[in-house]
Image 1 (cartoon, one colour):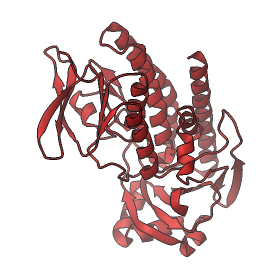
Image 2 (cartoon, one colour; image 1 turned 90 degrees about the horizontal axis):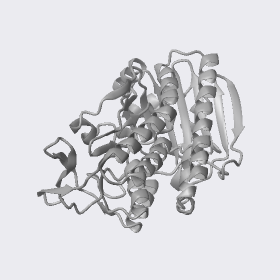
Image 3 (cartoon, rainbow, N blue to C red; image 1 turned 120 degrees about the horizontal axis):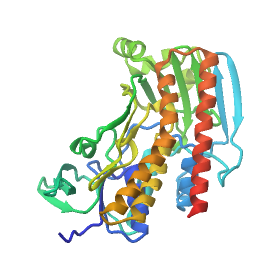
Image 4 (cartoon, rainbow, N blue to C red; image 1 turned 90 degrees about the vertical axis):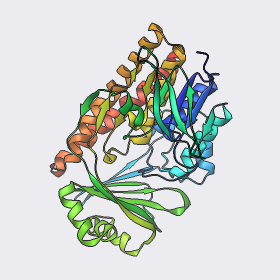
Length: 385
């Protein structure tokens, strides 16, 4: 077999587009496909943490995020019941602010950078199955093009970046290494004006809320809690009223009453976190396909960017099939797990919503510590390279 591609990436959103970009920048022949249309929106908290901003700056993409009108975030307000604790985002690790770009901004910037680097990016092209060699190794994908025609593309490595319901992970039966039990149901939407001045994270027993300033003068507002609280409220009153009821006792309640809704308010049913084994013969997983965490972590995009960096480094260390590539992917999995498992366990406890206010404060301090470890790891990684 003499395949046309060195790697095929299934999924062209944050994790997939970033991985394709990094591989293509190093000269690999990459095909990146996505079933959605280019620039389409998707459910997202938008909030990038310091590690995510650090990587975008390292990849020379942060200016594009700024130029798209994404507001800088230099303050985070934590509220616990009636207590408010402002925290300044101080310049560190080359990052002087956080950002929360709309996915209609971030995803096209990443996929555009992948295409500019030489990757072939195709939208409206779902993968319907995987190809297997006689030894069981994954050797490519089965695609359906925009005209509904079936065709095949071959590559020695197929990377699943196709989200928590990953077809790639399903077809290879990727083992689950961690399976959570708690999940948050969330109602969210966009409002304007809502001058929050930065990220707002608000907690009271049984309910978590947030406000995230993003592009076009909009603020993403969400409220979440256990399904047994949120779902009956949504069924009885609808998502918009549910959001206002859940947020009413908190600091966002009065401002929400004055703000104008932009678009519809949505209800997203919770899914417990999980961590899958992210590699096998001829395949690898990145982003939510391999590591899904409750949205209350507000860490999904950051983890996707981080794991794209880790996976790309592993593949570039050993781009051809064989023992060296297997070893490199084993190292990728070990690094990803070491950074992900501590956060998964904390987020599992937060998503359960059985905490009191002192406990949630302690959990968030532990979360902050895992994020600091993540930034330190990425800084060391750059130094080692």
